Image (cartoon, rainbow, N blue to C red; front, side):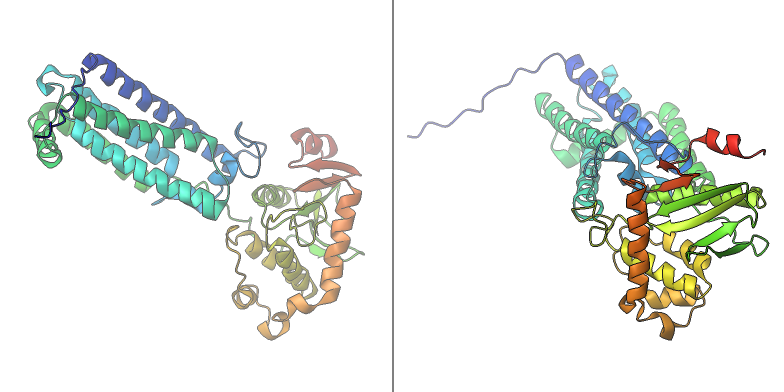
Length: 392
């Protein structure tokens, strides 16, 4: 007769060890989400902001924040994280009550942490195969979610909770039996969501300043488009890349200054696409397609439509490799028959290469680059520079 294997009994630690471990892990997730929410806001609103985890192209919280996947249903994912962890902590408080008998709420918490983990897997997939960059603090949240899943599963097993669906039903009944605290709490969360959906400002939607006909535009003697003062007190030459988020942010900022002081500032636009197919300082695939976008804008400049096309190109999603020339031509009011062979025009490519060589002569190592009176600034223009040169 074969001896039956006996299940090895596991003596659980005191309940408080499990409870407070889960609480601490949840608080770590809450703190990480709060940091990500602040960082996400500053990425879009603070010209000089760079998070501490913007370490490289592959490990860069800012790159992840700049992607459209950082927004879910009109609310930043980080804020969803804050809501989720606060909800988790609120429900966890019911597990500490003596009436919970060390069993109640843990199945519901396990189900919630399973949802957290599943979404973490989705985000990790997006980071790996679409954004091609990872967020360090997001990885912390992924780890938190996995730990919550593990510990809630462990508590269910250590304290011998009922079978899953039966226990889940009992957890729900347990909560419904406490309307004095559950109803106000649930109302608070539902009300907060409604307020977020109604009043959350879409600060991540950066629109270009209005292209007013009152602001002069033209071309320099070397064929570079400019906008702003005809007799400027300050000339800013920008070297830009249409796939560069900071380029877009700084370009819109300077255009805003020109709208405010149209008789004092002139912005001259030049190209420095960080595209490995044309820029010699880039040796690995990066900002793919930005060279073609620059060529399209150069063609638009010949048609007298540079600034219209410029604004369209900055708003193309940076992770979209396909370029719909026909759609761009319609939006910029350029005949499609004239632009459809734009990439075959060698003169435009030569113009772009001249811009790149000029950027290299200024020792540009990235974008955006700004040249003011032969002084070069990478990333942003120090605020004092504008104050020193213009009597606002």
